[in-house]
Length: 502
Image (cartoon, rainbow, N blue to C red; front, side, top):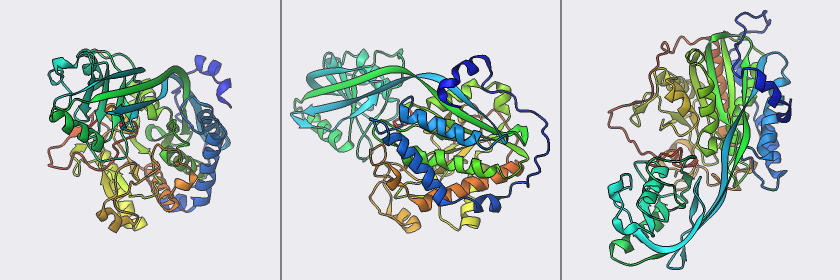
């Protein structure tokens, strides 16, 4: 069933319909981790990844951005793959409308190109005005000097949302804002967030690197007058897009494992690692799972519009009643699991590495993956910051425990990580992150198949029993006073995710 034929159906039917509480025996063997893992093949992962790449390259834009033709083809493909499995799953599309924005930004200071990045949802505007330094991180109105009226604000990334910085600058009379990075990475782009802010009007906003921003700050601190030429071009339109939801007909519908992966790319490219790898990874597990029975229901949710601020997952969780949320024992999210210069990252559910813990059950999910990599796969791993910057965030905010795997984005691989995983130190985990080069050639197939087997292990384990998890409680993410590192070289981007700026 294609996207175009679904609107009338969903206008009259619930998107989160109840799963039958009793089913005929399916005469299938109960899922086992080793058997489910054994049938996963890298050739299938690669072939399906090529299909997604083909969807992108069949469009003039050569991407799979949400609501576009490449992404719509992806949605139809996922739906059709699950529907072809017969009556093993209940599968449906969940439509929703979100504001799409695209464009570009440029910034020259003293005639020198600063290689600016665009903040999505930024207004358009072109100005040539003096650059004025904002104090601290620009998170309170007092940081903005009275001399800013009619000029362009230079603001450090950090502590608060990008949108707040832009709004406060607008309230102080600035005509535009430039936010410079606080970590050393190739570029800074993010999102201001859709909609109005009470603190002030959003103004044209661009991002630049730490090196460029520091150089400009030092000149301004030395009382040098700098003239900035900023040009932000932004296009906005409402787009209808879809989440794909598939739940096993077998298994206890009151105890559900939910797996999530986002289906959309950024405008710049086809997004085959980010996040074709997660989408295809859970798809292949879903296909192979259909050979087995489960004691607990397994729900696969392919969410849309992640790259614009976790929109699909936020919409999905908001659509669930409290009773439906209570049935979800755990969310496992997979976003970028085949990075070329990979690490095996496991989200820090107990917070002992980075000081932020998920809801009760998140620590046990982390341990499941740790034990798997240690004892079954024989592979090294590192904790990854559980900072709510991917689609598990909406589940955590609803008090649902979460976990997952991550092979790295634009963060820089350390020598210590090279000793664990190989690869190149001083180079990004994915040098093609959010770039045109994020295609099939960008995938590390060793990381891809190993992570997919880890996903299968989790599905088989929880498909049999949730006995390792504590009872569900409505606890949300917890900050821990453990002295752990809060900043870490994890995911700083993904539209800088999501309005967080530390």
